[in-house]
Image (cartoon, rainbow, N blue to C red; front, side):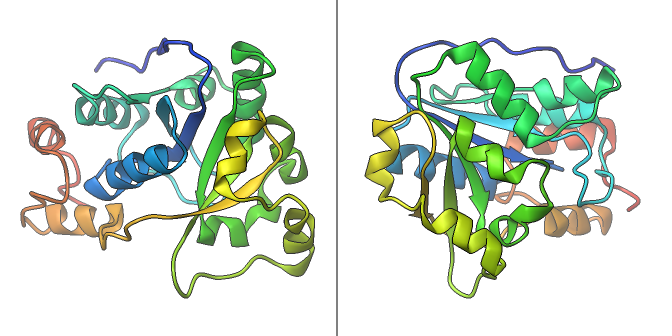
Length: 226
């Protein structure tokens, strides 16, 4: 099976929005979030970064290569969204993969002035202090929180740290890093867990997952026995 390879990107001066996840598999909810966040932040590009083995989650059901290939298929024909596979490649090289390392790499690659925006859900924000060097994230990028009703709130010490950096999302485009903003996006009731459960029980996941991804899943017999 083909292994993930590095991805090249066009370079301009507008914001780059970054969205990480296991994408096990990539589904319409992921794509809709990226579309709406990119529009809200007037981003030139939205990069989807499949994670290797997140420290606070279990092993993905599909391996690195299938998840990378499903993502590439989902993004075929997209003019703004694209895949960046550096976290999978880092793990293949035997190195741990952390968001802070990814942001350091990206900042070094694109230079000091172009805005970088890391998207994270409110549930991730509530656990931000479990991330490696979480206090340094804003040195390299902005954080944009995908808001939804009833989401957990971060611990007091995390909230106190972030409160000083909260700004309207329009301010994100005026600096390369350092701000926290909220973005309201459509909350589609789709999850990779639900998709895997449907597929493992022999039911269809059509209209929850791009057709090209469903074709790949069928071709390779993924998620049959979970």
